Image (tube, rainbow, N blue to C red):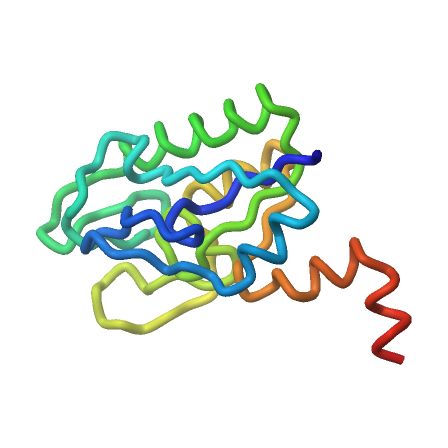
Length: 155
């Protein structure tokens, strides 16, 4: 069964900065076709649960208290890629707006709650290495792509 790297918060692991999760209602659907490999680049990069909220600011990642956590984010991104390489993973499903995992949007880096176009640290790294990255908002379309019979039924 093909493996997919997935943000651990999306499968229900309490790894968010505040110790909660973002469990996706589509996990059971994904499990019909894929083995999911949960991974949190922030935690695996050395940050704790809970932790200060962080946002990407250009090439750096800073916490709301002004601490530069770029090194931890970079290490987590490298670990995510190493897992993909080791397990032959070609697709990752990551959490939109996260400073690590945002696929299309991230927060503006100034803790204003304003979203901007951009990619998280891990997303950018994985894409540079040839891994296809989609957000949890694209899971339904992704499943339709791999299940042609569902495309036919909806016509």
